[in-house]
Length: 382
Image 1 (cartoon, helix red, strand yellow):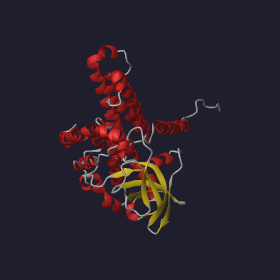
Image 2 (cartoon, rainbow, N blue to C red; image 1 turned 135 degrees about the vertical axis):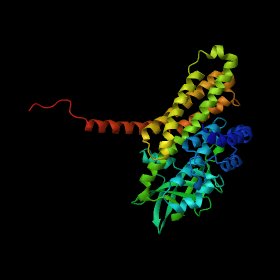
Image 3 (cartoon, helix red, strand yellow; image 1 turned 90 degrees about the vertical axis):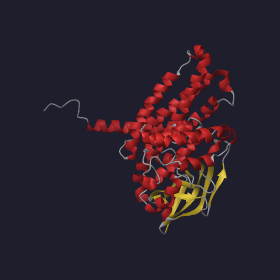
Image 4 (cartoon, rainbow, N blue to C red; image 1 turned 45 degrees about the vertical axis):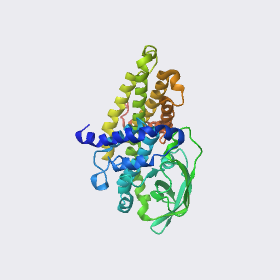
C-alpha cells in the first residue's frame, strides 16, 4: 500500500473503530441503520476512492475502494454491504455518458451527503436469463414513465436515491435514478431477515413515476455498452465484503487457538490455510481492479474471483464457529453473526449459483469457439 493510500485509510480505520464497532450488535440484533457513520465515512472519501478528483474522489483506484469495504466488513458485514451499495452508485454515475445525471447527483453521492441504493439485482438476474424484469417503462417526451415493483432494495428510504433499471417497450432497457420524493414512488417494509436488518432494505413501488432525461444513466441505445462498462467493478466491489468477513473469521480462529489450539488442530480449514486462500483472491483482485477501471478486463476472471470469495467466506465462517466451540453457538458470539453474513455474501446478486451459471456459459462459449476455429484432426487423402 502506497503512502497516499495509508494516509487515506488511517482516518477511515479510526472512524470504523470508534464509531462503527460499538454499534455492531445494535445493527445486527436491532436493525439499527448506521446513517451517521455513512455520512461521516463519505466525508472522508470512503465511497469515492475509485473516482477522479473532479468527480469528488481521490483517484486512488477501485482496489482501494474494495479495501475500504473490507475494513468495514472486518467489524460489520451489514455496514460493508451499505458501503458497497453507496460506492457502486457513485461508480454507476461516474461511468454514465450523460453529463446531466452526473452533475445532478455524483458529488453528493460520492461524498456521502446523499445516500443511495442500487436496485440492480432483478435487472442483473434478468440479463442472465434467471428471472423476468419487474420494472416497465414507456417513453414520454425526452423521459420515461415507469411502473412496477422491486422486492428488496437496500440503503434506500426517505431522503435517499435509488438507481434501478427498467425494460422499455420495443426498445431495450434504461438505467435511471429516482429520488424518494418522486411522485408515484413509495417504499414499504419487507419481512424480517435473519441478518442484514440494519441495511434499510425496502420494497420499492413505482406507479407511473416520471423519469426526466436528466435522471437517466443509460438510454436504450447506450444500455448494452454501459452495463459492460460497469459490471466488472460492480462485481469486484462485492469481494470487499467477503474479504473483511474472512479476515474476521481467521481472527476468531486465532483467538480460540490460544486456549484450545491443541484440539482445534484436528479441524479442517486451519487459519493458515484460510489466510493463504484469501491472499490468492486478494492478489487476483489487485490485478483485476485497475483493468476493470480501464474497461479492459474480461468478465470470466472477475466472476471466478467473486465465486471464490463466496466459497471461502462460507468455509471461513463455519471454521470460526467450530474453532470457537460451544461459545460459538451463543447468539452474542461474533462467530454466529459471521455465519449469517457469510451466507449473505453467497446469496446476494450475483449469488453463487448465478455466478456458476454465468461462468459455465462463458466457458462453454469459449470452448465452442475454440472447437470451431481448430483445424481438423485428419486431412482427407487427395
